[in-house]
Length: 111
Ligand SMILES: [Zn+2]
Image 1: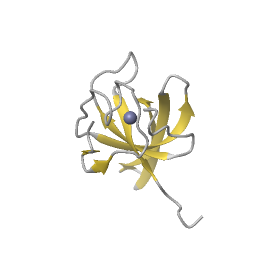
Image 2: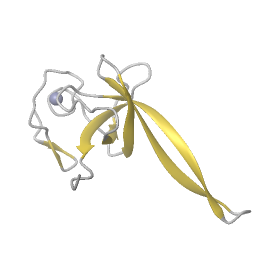
Image 3: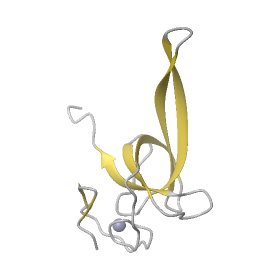
């Protein structure tokens, strides 16, 4: 078991998932993406989405684009729909998944 990955501490909960970066045999690459969980499946999968803007020189404004990614959701983290998560690239985990959630970003603590 690893205590931390890329400076991120392991969650308090433990799990027996082989595809968990903290408790299983999975190495992550230093390629990170932040996004919001918009869909969650029973088989430890989730879909994340994020917006980004690119400049349009002709109109001197920014265009907002949106990306989606299928990610692995380890049972020890268990990200819920609506949460902001940090995702790292890893080896191909299934046909559509090559990323894994490594942190749930706590936001709006003043709520
Ligand atoms: Zn785990």
